[in-house]
Image (cartoon, rainbow over all chains, first blue to last red; front, side, top):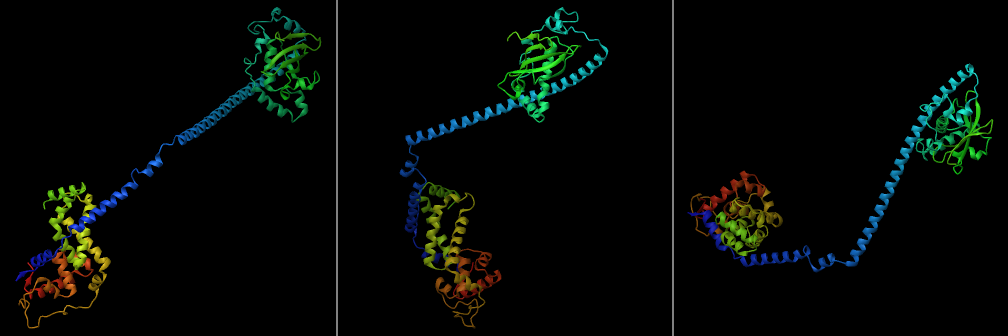
Length: 279
Length: 183
């Protein structure tokens, strides 16, 4: 008996053809196709054209980039300026709020002052010594440098020192808008900010018992009175009473860069008890 | 061929040296051709697939992992290529195995009086194989030439493994009558 597996395998091996030339041809064909396919992913003449350095194009691109950069910088600068403006406005708003708070405090002190005045009016006799106090405060026996520092109106009432700036006008503008609701009120009103600063300035001038501080609509042209409403007008006039005998006074002041008292006039005698030295 | 020698051949192929492929070809052509022939059953098809096998080995040499047993690696690739060919072009052969008809008795030259161990004639192995019916030839080829297991044959031909083993035993009995027995 013959071995089935051995006989069969040997027989098939004997029949196995020589396939090497065929296989080699296949390998060569594969390598050729591989080399032909390779240039499509490597640098070729066509690829070189694509990446060739084009000076004009380069300059054109650089120019466009430069223009874009300038535009971006301009936008950024505008944005920063806008932000800064907003920040300043915020600061101004905060200052205005602070001023309003101060004005409120002034109102309270003004009310208490008015109440005290009423009480004194009912008790004290009328003493007409205010002019001497104003003309020469240091000669008055009641004058004290601690209570009334050396008066230098132009210095004492300077815009910066009065904690007021041009932005205050904005807040005053708002106050003016409110006053426009009631014309009669508008005619007589002073903003709390102005009233506080004026009251403080008048006190530094030596005036006491100041009452009924209000705009004098009949004293001058109305356009002069309502400075905040007419921004090109610099002079404002207000009236008030001072001293235990309630002497009427007229106050001339500016508001462009904060409240600045120009002059104070005794409205009974016509005598100016104070004129700003800078005028 | 040793593992080291095979690794050297693969390295040569990866360097574009065809001698590496030629060495593998010389060592394993018979083996690969036999495996493929055992599955496809036709000389022309076996030659085509064997050629494709070595070209593919050249193309995909980088996929070989050293130390994994190169002979088994080669046999697996050869079988898969032959089976792919079978599925594409020899569908009728595979379909015949799923039919219920039994053509075992066809071409059966042995008379009923002969015993299984009796050699009735000495013929060449290929002629003896040709005496088997197609299903038996397929299983003998796969088992002997392609060195497939019964399980692999069962899976490839999509028939129960019991049927495969039964047909194989029947084929061996017939071949014994022609002077061949399994080792």
